[in-house]
Image: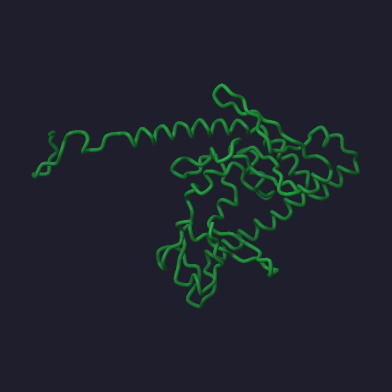
Amino acid sequence: MPLTAITPEQFAAKSWKRNTDYAFAARTNVLPVIAAELSHLVPAMPLAFVRADAAFQLVAVAALQRDENFFVAPDGRWIGDYVPATLRAHPFRLLKPQDRDESVLCFDTDSGLLAEAGQGMAFFDEAGAPAPALKDMLGFLAQIESSRTATQAAADALQSAGLIQAWPLNLRQGEQTLTVDGLYRIDEAGLNALPDEGFLSLRKSGALPLAYAQLLSMNQLNKLQQAATLQAKLREQARAASQAPGIADLGFRMSEGGTFKFS
């Protein structure tokens, strides 16, 4: 993903289009999420933790196997009930260079959403200041980053309390049953057994909503199966459509007088 810092010099003569195609995430089976969207995520997708170096990161599970995402249709549509915020921000990202304290707003120039001036929403106004739509996107990304920091602090508190454990899941593939590794969940028994002091510490850290959201979302594993079934139907429909005969194959042609007739 070639990310380019958005500057007047680079983007004043360009515009951008809002993303409606999620094909870029079609091979991503776990998606980073933030605490600010938990109320939308819990009824929509199963949540889990994955290891990120020495820490754990909260993610939404879009498929149990790598290189799959059951919520992205073959034509790029999102077929789930909720689109995670990080996907809705595409093709924008906030990045913090190593030599700077402030984050830089960047654009994925390979997204297909970069256009010439006047063909989309402007990056900058005539005075060289960020245009309103760009300001809105920057504000949205700033909210994501702020919540991401709080979300990670909550996950770290749960890890420190010893409440994140392996989540063994089985995946049926034909005649085989495969064990899915790499996903983690909250130790519900450990959470319930916490002494009052430990429970209060988690509450103060903001970690409890994260813990309960993950536990409740485990009931949404069936959403993966539903999405997988819909994916199979959509792929079959697309395959059938691609194999359907065209007008030229049906044996009729347009006559000079403008009427169809069979050959």
